[in-house]
Image 1 (cartoon, helix red, strand yellow):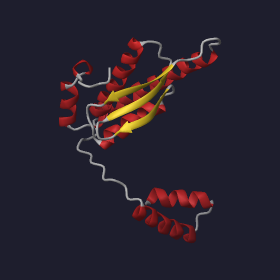
Image 2 (cartoon, one colour; image 1 turned 180 degrees about the horizontal axis):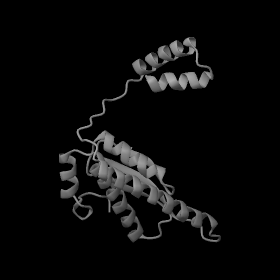
Image 3 (cartoon, rainbow, N blue to C red; image 1 turned 180 degrees about the vertical axis):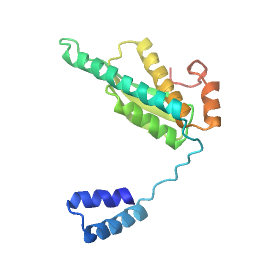
Image 4 (cartoon, rainbow, N blue to C red; image 1 turned 45 degrees about the horizontal axis):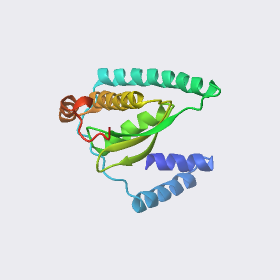
Length: 174
């Protein structure tokens, strides 16, 4: 509600009681008409793995930006792309959302669809030339999921990640 009221006031450009009350009314209507699904969070924040996740995310961001710049400046060779299905091991809505967001923020990859029931992300990727690069990208997404679960996951989710390494996954559309 606070975010909705803040956005409303920012859209009007003036902080006044009328805008705040109007934002409360609009926020109440929006939240009533479009209720959000409950998000369960069984884990807890683990500071050291969270720092590792953040640092690796920043590294991935820089490396991917350079790779995309090279693809954009390379004349005569249009970049190849692929849509890759990646089944995640932890199928919670929170994990699907956070993994998809972290992946979409890195240049060169974009979530095109999510199969919520099966826990599969469909990702459009630039710059893949062969099957080996597709598998490397898929393994990279699973590593991203593992870092995310290490940072904020429950003990059960972390155990699930350890038990299902990329080589033991079934039905990964390979």
